[in-house]
Amino acid sequence: MSAVPSVTADQHATLEARLARFPAQQVRLATQRAVSYREVDSAGSSALPLVLLHGIGSGAASWVQQFEGLGATRRVLAWDAPGYGASTPVVAGSPAAADYASLLKEWLDALGIERCVLLGHSLGAIIAGAFAVAHPQRVAGLLLLSPAGGYGAASAELRNAKRDQRLAMLNELGPQGLAEKRSANMLSAHASDEARAWVRWNMSRVIPHGYAQATHLLANADLAGDLARFKGRINVAVGADDTITTPEACERLALAAGTKLQVVPRAGHAGYIEAPAAYTAIIDTFCRTSDGQRSQ
Image (cartoon, rainbow, N blue to C red):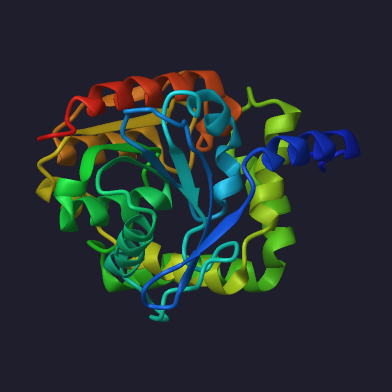
């Protein structure tokens, strides 16, 4: 496996300049909890908002290319999940998807978003699925990119083993070491050095407590069960070279959702970072079709 490049000074300056267009914000919820997020608001657009939920080793900043590509036509928002960025962690030490979905509802309520297109990547797909089942009237379309299915339907032994393995790695390496060891797995062999540095930078910023809670969420969740109950519009896409949530695993989730799997060539797990044009086109097409679901 090739070495993961560090973020060079020039790359860091470029990244900071791009992120400065979408500064981190924070909103206090009715329960006195906080959610940090980034957004671009296309003033006057009649399109539905697009809400982006990141995966376990990432954050709101990872979606900067989608802000740039989609923000001209609709409001686009990405949160830092509970326990990430400046967002308050969930209360439960070993949370369920419903704990995160509840805070997602509070955040959308605080921002006045009654209906949206909801996109979840990897672990974010678990939260998106739980929210869609609990509040189907608020989701015009559910788009899942490289969704993690969770281990909630597996044996207790497997759930515990998967959880403990990831927690041990976090305890041993810390966020920076985790980024150095795991970030290369997020991308395909076709990814640019810039994409590799970008994924590593995002992963190095995770907060251990929030990451640990998300690890419990992954062990406890059963996305396939939620998808089977959601009767709204769903699309599922995965990178052809995704070795984390493989096309075969995502095919099983697509079947549970009653939809076809879309496979993106030359892309890995964080495909929206390494192949932004292809993924932004998928997202844009799904959003435009979902806009027609506004009143349904």
